[in-house]
Image (tube, rainbow, N blue to C red; front, side, top):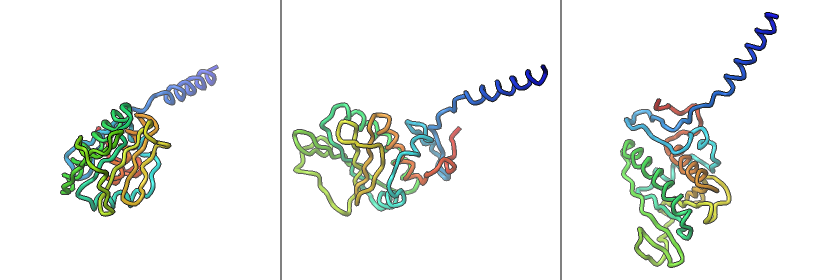
Length: 190
């Protein structure tokens, strides 16, 4: 009888311990930076967003003094999603680059039925240069076929098939720039 009670107690402990939910990890510290970096999603999820060549993405962005933000502005819903993803990305990277001693700007370009715009001023087209860097955000209604961060030439495509997935891809881009490519390299802020 005592063995039966002991066995039931052990099983209960195992079941209960397996049911505890892990608290989302959304804040980290970077060695040498005073700032705590906050992420919209659990970093343990965002770190798994598929990417192509993280090292080349980081090299490309680090050599640029200007990161051109580009998106298709034809979907009101995606415009809202992209605004959040861009805000999160730019706010983190501005602080990160300042701590690294790097000055950078983020001009915004978009297009809709009326043509191309730079920060709400009509322009003849996207001023493309192979020497410039572009972060092209793609939402679920404007062409995202997957959730990923993909490098193609000097364009980094940040795409997500939902609001959450787009913000996870934006989080992933920040993690790439911070040199975080696995959960073990994270220093929690808590």
